[in-house]
Structure formats: C-alpha cells, structure tokens
Length: 280
View 1 (cartoon, rainbow, N blue to C red):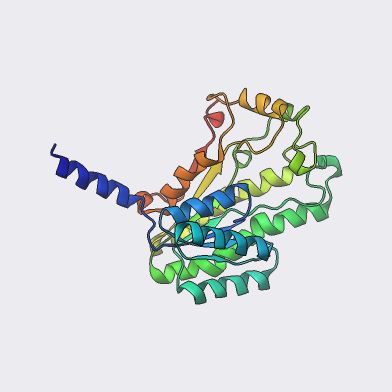
View 2 (view 1 turned 90 degrees about the vertical axis):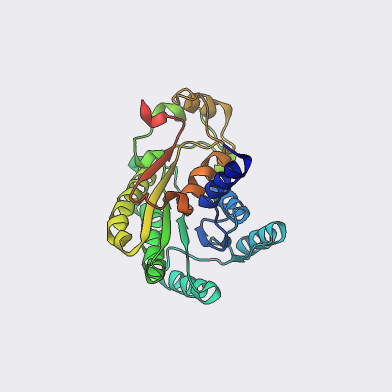
C-alpha cells in the first residue's frame, strides 16, 4: 500500500472520531470524571458547555479549557432537581449555540446521609438522589432532545455504573475508607436503583428518537481510582479480571466514540468499561 493511500485511510479513520464544531453539553461537568470529559471533548474539537451546581466552578473550568484549547467553552450552572432551573439552562444553551449535538448526562447526586445503611436510609435522602439521577435526566432530555430531533441528528450519552448492572459485593467495603467522601463508604440501594433506571431510560430513548436521527447510549464505568484507601483498592481489584481499578482516562475513549460519527450506527447500547468485572 502506498504511503499516500495509507495517509488517506488514516485521515478517514481520524475523521470518524473528530468532534470539530460539535456542541457538547456535560452535566456534572466539574466532578472527577466530568472535568476530564469536558477537557478531552474540547481537545477533540468540540465546543463544550460545562454544567454543574456551582456557577463559579463551571465558569472557572470553562475559562481554563477555552484558554488551553482555543475552543468555545461556556460554564453554565444548573440545579437538575428544579424544573425551572433546567428549562432556563436549556434555553440559554440554545440561545448561545443554536443547537446541541451531544448531551452527556453525567451528573449524580450524593445526599446528606448517602452512606447510611439501608435500614436507616431516609425517604428524604432517597428523594434527593432520585431528583437528580433520574428526574434530572428526564428533564435534560425533555428540554434538549427535541433540539436534536429538529436538527435530525444527535447523540445522548447517559452515564450509568456497573452497580446499575450487577449488585455490589458488600465484602469490598469492609475496612474501606474514602477521605473526600467523609470516611467509610458503600454503595447504597438508591445509587444502584437510579443507575439501573439510567440504562432503562437509554433503551426507551433509543427507540423513541432513533427514527429521528438521535442516538442514545449508556456509558457504564467500573470502579475508578480516585482517592479510595488501599484496602478498598485491593479488594475491588481482586474482583476484576484485569486485576486493578480503572484510571479516569480509560473512560475517555468510549465517550469520544459515542459522541462521534464513529458510532453512527450504535444506538440503545450499554458500553461497559469495567476491566471485565461483569464478565465473571
């Protein structure tokens, strides 16, 4: 094969993953994974809307990304648990960019007593998490999905968790500690419930808007190393065929794939990036 032909084929392949000019909206955009997603989408050529609860954090990250990459980045706060906030947020996005190409529903809430045992988990904590993880996602797709339908093309990427697919192994939490989360951790029922709902919502939206050219898929990360203590990391890693936790960067490839034209015929799927944990 000639060098010219090889270069042409590489160019075509690279173009499949190109996000040049696409408007990508990321909820939970200033979190551990959300921050990385926003940066890498911008580096792939996208205009990025960084959305989270705290306006100053959204604006700071957007400015940082814009300065570093040269793309257009907008920091726009939203409270996903409040319908009026989501409606105003969506309206502002459309006013600023005209349309939306990619919506990444990445936000997930942790309530006041998020790690309380099931027997003591309050209804208020349950409702607080449900309001963001499920109802908030409903509101974002209700407001921005029709914008994609009008354009005749778009990609909705809903972020789930392996614990929306399988139940957590409670043994890995014995002696576990996560300082940034306030100490001892576990996976509460509300988390698994809402993340399972995310996968169900994806399948519905894939069949509802698929005929209009809007694809909906789920990205499901396995456990990502982000400050858990060594006891947790070792116990979790022993459950994974690859023998370790994920690094945040290892979620990016699947995200770019689902956001780009490389996945133009992928719809209604759950892409699980878990090192093989769910293959057991």
